[in-house]
Length: 247
Image (cartoon, rainbow, N blue to C red):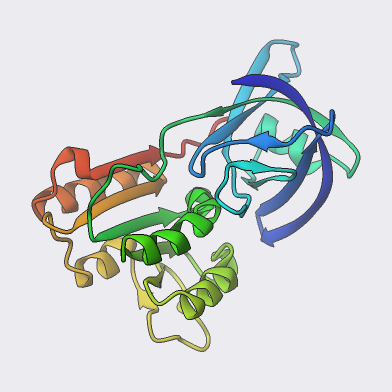
């Protein structure tokens, strides 16, 4: 882990309240990380007291771990101090960061046949960073991957087109969007109405073949963890990362 400055080089809105930010290290050095890890951005509250926020790295690299651009997705919280900082950051602006941190990564010694990747909101970001590894594992280990992603509406389905395209390219990968409030105007075959547990139950989690990854809001993570345990998966087969909104 090290500390460094990040300079914003590009950004765009992914959804009405989510901004995709692309940074480079201000010193020009590459950023080495394992897909699934996160960085922390350090700043101060209005009263001067220090604080920090965590963001999963979403950069799609070649799987080697070193990238020139560090990408994150920031969900805006009304009145949030980090939201204000990152909403107002212009291209060329810098922030203080440290990392990488975390162990929410694909494990080299796994021998399972299928991964169930479950996410809500910006919790899908680490899976985007894993795409190169996923492509490789579908070939080298003949693994299958099912990404189950919950959003309230199509407008909030982050990186949906990228995951749809990846599913068309990679036979071992399937994408299952779940819309909890408003279904897609033109539904697609894997779309489901409801929460992620609906699609997950259809995939029939199996303790013999599966390892599950859960990332997103704590309620989803806890409910899905219980569902998977009821299906017979042991705790080591269920890897979790909770996203908690902070002011």
